[in-house]
Image (cartoon, rainbow, N blue to C red):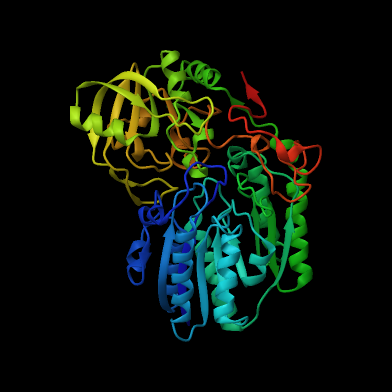
Length: 518
């Protein structure tokens, strides 16, 4: 079989301050930097991404692999028009010029919004179908947070979504999609498909499949396949996208339409019934989070208490530079504590100029776009310096090589602050170690992440808390100023419905959440 391979990944927060331009895809920001042609085969040998799993299946099956282009950028505001058009054009033309093909595998996200296009993946597939026609099989691997449109589903023969959050099954999902593609190419049989949209949004950290009710919902996905579906996927949706297709969906495939419909209906019904259970999860304001963490750290036991600074998660469009949690740590007199990543190239450069052991005055972090956040002016000791190169070996990054640029550990009072020049989500213990912080020896860690950190940090954690300092990504989707969602979508599990009672025009409040402990 002769199969074309391509990837184009971006999770778009339409409320975030910074767009994804071409340079963002060239850097990668935690993804593999943009790569073309035969170089893709080496780039994906030892990473946890859908393309890696699909390539392994293709090689095992003896496919004639035609690698075209793979590009991914860290979540942010819209993909720029220029970046979208350049990358989409290269993928479509690469397929057009590939010669005879038996199939196409695509590694996508599912929640891409460009400056000029609401449904990035749907538009890419529309263009591809116009080139290859209706008969060439196309399969794709997608993120659990995809905002999946009916048009997109109509243009692929089969899609498979992640089943874990933190996403430790990205390569596995790519392999599953490639295996389905192999079956379709060999048999010529396309499965029946079913698509269901559900009625409410869920805060990002509470979507974790390691918590209730997410764990049971994804066990239900596997049960649908055991009960006869060829493939089943539940997409929680990425809630910070002001587009009509924002929100959760279920997609299922079967040998018959009845089997596909049965699985999709089961997934949708379970999700709707889970709304009350999502409300049982708890979040804390910054001072309360630190106080609670210090109390828990003082009790007998081992390992740090970890606080997720969820509203400044760069994996959801955050800037990884807000100061609310650092201020709370210093205010509380925390010792044996660390926070990261704080992206501040100027502070990192100042530390490198001064050298290890120097005392410097810095104006750290802060961003004008975030209400309630200001830079933190303070004295700091330079504890460690790094060029920013590291290999993230935990289950989420899965061996990805990261380049965070000139970086430093600054000690402010009793708090070690990991300062970098480039952005990436703090989801791997090596992202502390590379500047001399040993996470296992700390009492308290604050991570700029919502959920992915759990994959590598949960095994050492005494406890995990979620905090809501001011940031670009409100915990509660109902705090976002939506204007374009589909009518009737509930903005949180028990929140208002969009288009009813003025729910669409609520002003943003980056500090408010549901179920917050003061």
